[in-house]
Amino acid sequence: MNDNATPSLTPNTPSEASPWLFCVAPMLDWTDRPCRFFERLLTRRGRLYTEMVTTGAIRFGSRDALLGNSRVAGPTALQLGGSDPKELAFAVEAAAPYGYDEFNLNCGCPSPRVQKGSFGACLMLDAKLVAECVRAMRDATDKPVTVKHRIGVDERSDYGFVRDFVGEVYDAGCRTFIVHARAAWLQGLSPKENREVPPLMRSRAWELKRDFPDAVIVLNGAVKTTAECRALLDEVHDGVRIDGVMVGRAAYQTPWMLSEVDSVLYGESCRTLTREAVIAAVEAEVEQYYAADEHVTRAFARHLNGLCQGLSGARVWRRTLADPKIIKAEGPNLYRRAWREAFGTVF
Image (cartoon, rainbow, N blue to C red; front, side, top):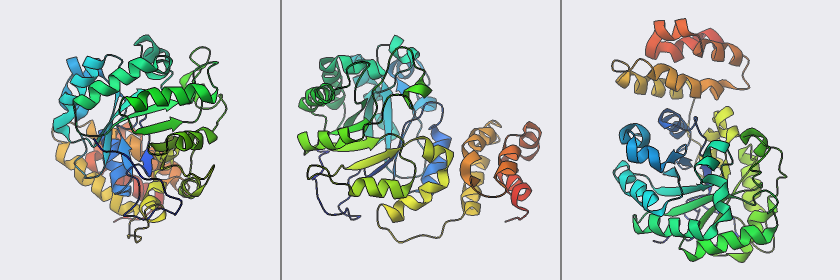
């Protein structure tokens, strides 16, 4: 498997860009299939991640429901939660028919539920086990196997800890590391507090790139705009640049930022894209499934909440999308109705 990227001190061009130049983070209960369909309308080049899917769910649940991928082409990764190498290999094999471009192991989630299952951030305390998991996953696919991790766990937040963790997993063949630049505090903090309270230490990403120059290092943590992404990608520390950035909640809460990704980060010519065109595409997708499942209207609506963030009619837009009576009355026409209510125009 070859998922290396050659570091360069010149700005990335579209032909040279790392496949991980821009990523949208896996977010539990958010980055489901409707969400990814919507995000793909906004960026053709950005790499999208599923919400975490556990190996147990894949073993015993509905695989079509869990693993079904968006029909809009573009690089997409499946994030897996688990700590049993055999079960992770099984999950990778089971997911193969669904066309994912990458399999990512979650070593960063600090939630009590995930800790109870002995995976997520607590896996960083057993780097040898993570290495075994990565080897098993790599044996099950020719697609890149990657790891998303924190920079520390509890009091283990020194650079040596994360360096040694990455080194062990690197020796197992992993070449792409998504670095959430905060430590995970496994006791005393909620998942939300774990995204805000532990200090943000972005410099760790550049330190890892310095020590593992042929690895792909992707920075995650409180990145909010495409301009900030561009600045981070151009930043040089110790003579190296990182290979990519991953944006989480900003991409979900203000999704129109994704419409800038292909031009600002990949250098592509700006395409004419309007919110109305995005709404029409979502409507067409919903119409295909509505007869069999009326809930699909609401499933898409919740992801479109932020589409008009910053516009004068955004509050009305959100209120209309969430109104149960309007959802039931309008069906797939909900989104046009919300636009008309918010902005007084039709299309």
